[in-house]
Amino acid sequence: MQLELLFPNPNRYVRFLLGMYLKRKRTEMAYSEEFIANHLGLKEGSYKKLESGHMNFTNEHFVRLQNLLSFEADDLIEIRKIVDVQFINNLSAEMSENFPR
Image (cartoon, rainbow, N blue to C red; front, side, top):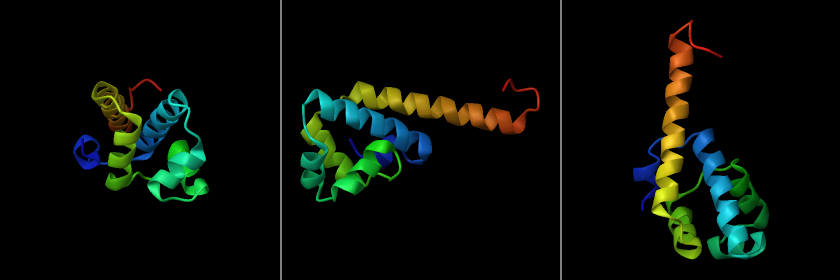
């Protein structure tokens, strides 16, 4: 699955949720941060930024991670739904003074 198709507008919510998902999958498979970083051709510090949501995924990294960690399509779709709801909530808050905060 292509990153751009699933998340056409990556933002902090996308980065955060994908990072959490990445960490969960990595720990389930008992891979170290160093192992994943090497697999991606990144320094460990850069990988930690990916996992913490402080750095955008590239499509190449996403595809490599998807293959290595067996990302579940259903999980990625759920992340997309959560991001969409967050976007709608943010937009509603900006457009309506009566939106509950």
